Image (tube, one colour):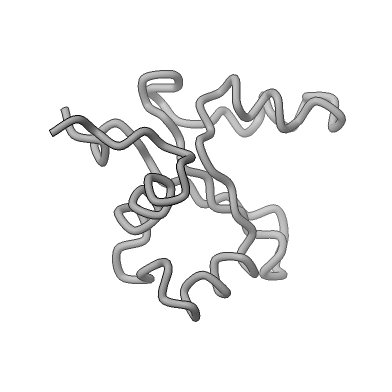
Length: 99
């Protein structure tokens, strides 16, 4: 299975401002159904990052960060999932698939 099928892009909004919108790249082998937002909301905020990692979150960006990455050409708005996986591989956050 290729790396794009092993991951899922989830966009979760907690409000109306760009910094209230979060983009998560999730490892489906850890969380086949994606992130459980309701369960995450109940977590202690001090352990939020750890819980995200345990839930298979590979990368997380705010809406503002996404806009900046798009403006720099590091993400493609029309294929956000693929370009986020490619960025993760380039930055070392995701292991490149063996060819």
